[in-house]
Image (cartoon, rainbow, N blue to C red; front, side):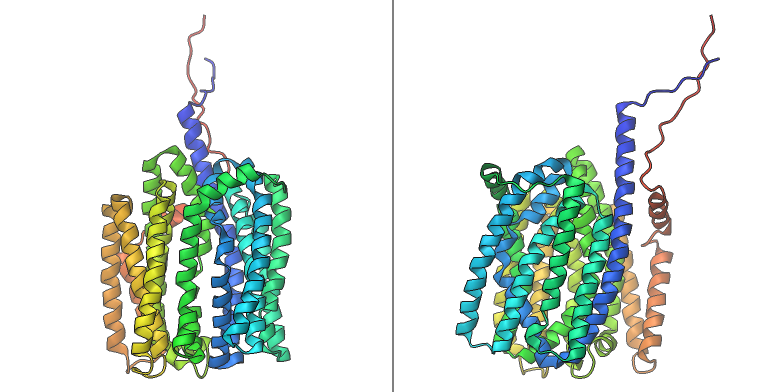
Length: 517
């Protein structure tokens, strides 16, 4: 008898590589998720500090300045981040073809835009301290755009450990700087300086990591960059539309209503924005993974998309329910006195983020299926509809329903816009979005949510806020587990995959008996 090792077939090798890829994605998610928990803890503290330090009107100026600067610098995005996450995962060496030239292009655009921004601010008659604040935010925004591309390169390569540490360090710089400035009582015009400092630190760290892990080189290649910019056009238009969709609302609210309304809306948005806790994971991990899946087969891409949508709903729906049912409590805890009117806009905003996560996954599927122009069309439609709704709803509701009428109008505009975009995305995906299993999960979750809302309404007035939320949360958890909307066994499977630590899938060794001669 002899012992022989059966050589793995190409299919076995492919399956092993695919299993390693999944384990690596889970491990990257956990690494990045750990850093996100730390950074969000810092952000949570700052979100609670700033409204109390500034008050509704000054906080409104603060949010308006950041939104105005971000809108002004939309053009520097170039659509490069999405292009990187689509192309670099399958050919990492391509990054050096366009990186240097696009960096110089962005630098030139930043210099031109800074001059234009100064002229616009001078002629709009904003207070000098606000003009100063906007310019600092503009400088920070130019760094944020570059850092997003650097992070996309590292995510595409799957090298996230150093980036996770960088995220924590830079968030400490930002949060610590703001806390120090608040303690010293500095003027509002300096409150964006910590953001500039933190993004500058992040750029230095990201550049070193990119050189180490990708061999990134700074070189000028105009022909290659021209091709990349042509391919980036739909991604650029989409990014510009999405950025305007999320920023012009505050600018319009400040002009059509008051900066105090912007403060209330900003308070509600900052709380609701906490539901974006896992949103970076989509670009950092899911998009490169879906890029590789698309390269193998459309069926694998669709399967991954459906399961990702299930995970999105499992996470976002309970958070959304907590935001809606506890809006008054969260506003009181996070924003403090003077922000009570923000509770109604918060209730309107909370469901938006469930839809936003769905559109994130949907847009990745469309992009990987070479339907990126459809994403551009839907995003552009949203960018047109949102300001039109704001122009109609803000004058109508401002003052009509009391304080926060303008803020509620802006929240409603965002809500209706997100509904339109989500419907467009899902209709284009068809059966690639939800199958029978995921539709059953949606139905069960919706039924549990209905029970929780009914229970909450029954308890209002007779039970205080914390016990009431605790009872509804317990009801939700029990409901989704009993109905099977959430499967604990699948969560345990993810944990087991993470513990594999990326080890290669074992190749089966077969012991066979061979005749002796």
